Every structure is written in structure tokens, then in C-alpha cells.
Amino acid sequence: MLELRNPHSVMAALEMRPNAVRSIRLNAKQSGTPWDDVAAFAHKRGVNVTIGPAEQKPQSRGRGRDTERVGAGSAQVEPPSPVPLANLWKAGNDKANGFGVWLALDQVQDPQNLGAIFRLAGFFGVKGVIMTKDKSAPVNATVCDVATGGVEYIPFAIVPNLAQTIQKAQKLDIWALGTCERSDINIRDVKQDRHWMLVMGNEGDGMRRLTRETCDQLVSLPSQGRVPSLNVAAATAACLTALTGA
Image 1 (spheres, rainbow, N blue to C red):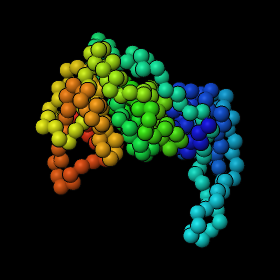
Image 2: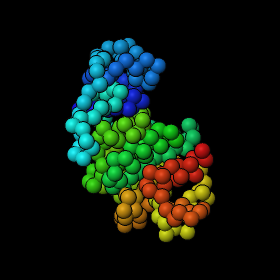
Image 3: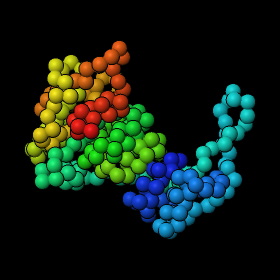
């Protein structure tokens, strides 16, 4: 069970998976706040909401107090489940509705980055997110809260072999676009004339060799200023902006 503390994440769970929201606690009356909206929607969905004094939790050493106040509210929510890979392709592989973009993450390990990427996926209308089974951050409470609903709105699949998954996508006319700082092709020059799977590497080493070699095309995101690089979440935002024309 996950304890979510972002009211927007809880609202998304109520909308998409109401049976997965076991309970909601408000630490005080939250009139006029997002938690007030959560409580009202939860009542409509038949989810139990309790209101009580602010909880306390043990405080780390060195802060001068034994306890500290926690957030305005929280919810107990069952973890979201990955979908079969075949379902991920069905989410948007239809040229009649325009070209789609999928995201593939090659061992992204930081939950903050993963949550931010899911939020970006929800903002840019990504059709699905693919993550590797090994050496990847789990979809935990931190990811869900940082995603601000993105985990609920964007289907995701977890695969044991990313290179083989890319090959399956290619057979469905989805082109794999790998990000590599050594590429001479600027992602800003990529045409929006086909389905793309944008492949992002992990925080330290980027894409693995086999992943890189399986991609149809490698692109870079050259710096326009004095800062030479971005973390994976910020780079994903810039790449999706370029690839979707947003």
C-alpha cells in the first residue's frame, strides 16, 4: 500500500482507480484547498475520509525537537500496475489519429526523476512509458506524488529486455529515437512524420550499448548556453518539446 501526500495524485487515483483508494485522512479541515476537492470527490466515490488533528512523526536527530508535523492530508492507495506490452502499443498506434510518441527509459534509477518523467508524459500526451525490470526505480509513493497524476493517466510496461522491446516496436512501425550526446543530429531537426519511441538513458551512463545500437536514429540536445548538460528529467522535457512541437 502506498501513502500518497499530493492531493492531485490522490484525485487522479480516485478518478482512474477509485477502488484502489482505501482511505483518505485530512489532518485538519482543508476548506478551499485541493484536499477539500479530494474529500468531496471521495465521498461521491464512496471512499472513507477522516478528519483529525495533525499527525506527528519522529524527527531526525539534530533538529532540536522530538516530533514534527506532517502534511495536510494523505491517502492509502494500492500501487498502480503495469500493463502488458501489447496494450501499450494499442494506446496510440493509429495513424488516423495522428502520430504518437512513447517513452522508453533505460534504467532510470532516481524516483524523483521517474516521477517527473511521468508528469511530463501526462503533460505532453505520451502514449505510454516503458521501463526496464532491472536497475530501475520502482513506481512507489514518491514517484506517484511527484508525477502529480501522471502515473494514473499514462499506461506503463516493465520489460526484461529493452533492446528486444525496441525491436517489437519497430515491427509495428514505431521508430526508436535514442538520445546520445555524441550524435551529430539535433533533436530539434527531427520531423514529426511518424510514430516515435523516445529512448532516454539513465542518470549516470546514458543508454547502454545494445540499446543504443538497436535504435533507428540517435540524436543529441546541444546546449544553447553555458550549462553543458541536463538531468534525465529536464532532458526529457526538452526532447518532448522538440519532438511534439509543443
